[in-house]
Image (cartoon, rainbow, N blue to C red):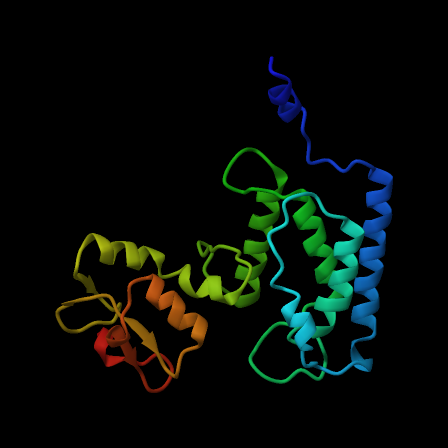
Length: 228
């Protein structure tokens, strides 16, 4: 076997020194705890200095880097200049602040790296348990289900994907309301909103093939005569 091929087959993504990685990981965790603990002592948001902004136009790395150096740059050049939504004084666009325990949960989930697309594994049971809890909290029907996604931007598009697929398969389709007293109307796919949509919602609509003219503006709480 060619020596170059043999070397590539023996390559690994494991760290060269697990003990060193463990120490670096503990340092990273300590820095994040310090950051969260001291949030109130810092301003909600800070202007990004131009030299730091310019520093993110570096050439593409062509070799391995030093994890400690990356960590230090994160602490110095990234952590102080975030959106500030984790700060208790943050006011503005609705953006979750997170919690220290939530950060640890994300760490555990990322380390487990579970794929729930199949196979016999306990993470599937965990997700089903959470679905049951959500049904109970919101008093949803026993057959209600759903998907867990990482943010509301993804959630905005997920429920509409079947409708988008139907729209792609057929230019028009019937929308029938449960209490409809008139014959169903065959219309193109539409979106319904009671107030101006967010930027994320607009982007999801674009990906689903809904044009601006496809939106129906409704007054009140989802009372749209166009649907029945």
